[in-house]
Length: 497
Image (cartoon, rainbow, N blue to C red):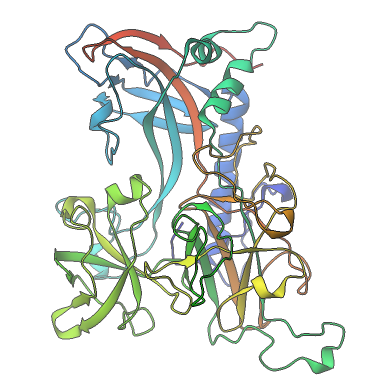
């Protein structure tokens, strides 16, 4: 979540039940947020244990016997997926969902699986405002915001069912193995809760860790302030294979490889857009101070509600000029015409902090390394370094500190192929939106990361975690109308065995 936080401290493996305040102590946002996470973890685990991986009375897929063409309805009500409560009110058509991007994916005479994709979205005070500028922000403060919110977001998506055998696997019950149908669903969907790439972080280490007296002044975090660095996957895909052309420019699979962006403020530096015309962006403000402002050559991203819901990763944009007296930013290139122009979608400009190493599209290539491979460490700034780690064997599922419900083993995204790298190592798969958080502290001159300083441990992404549940098999006739519906939902009273 891209909020102005100090750090994220919730860890379900510690089994804490609550946070207790003590008199005369400093209050931190991380303590408040950990209490909220402990409470949410308990409720979601309880719901998942009682209901199972999915279940509920709502979200009935309909439309059979109507005039709908290449479309279906999503019923109102509520439904639970991995303990997350999804609510829909009122009923709406499949093609009428907020942020919907797949209006042309349903074809005549085909069979589709309709399923739920559920995740949690961070919402700032600006993104919560309605058309009258009313929301969670307290107007009496005359500008400053206070807290932000987390919201359960769901989308009904569809996937083509290629043959009768696959349809049988998705619909047939097996009394001897009640969980088989759900397992078949995940195998067919071929989606992970996260990508399977890992990352390590450290402050710049000296060459010889065994001789501490020789540590140079540069071998530490050198920032003047405490920061929460965010490393986020921009374009999903495999890692870059490291190949270069004769001019030492990236080659090989660099056009399809995953890229990342980073922020020293957890991606929380945003500027609400008042107007957008071509490459001229008029802003509501230019930030509270110069540290949280904009400068020429900064890389920025224009986003809105639809952009976020579609998990888009357009080319980042670079600032050409800042006209402070007019609250305007001139970009070197214009953004795509379908983003940032509708005020009802809460358009904003988000600053990212990478400069050196950025590609022509603004992000940096993901390059993997192994333990002991110092050349594969990437320096962000002020001694903070990261390394994307190459798995020595096919990656396995993991339990992340932010996961609120245990996951079954799930296949990697079938749409992205692994790329073999030198030394027999296979590349991980990185997914747009996956992110890691790295607290850097002035007091220690180091980053807060598990493992010894000279050998930090690889960690999976903090999020964004996606959960999935089947809803129905939808069959269209040659005229594009629904000729068959098979309900795949589970009533709550049917406990998962």
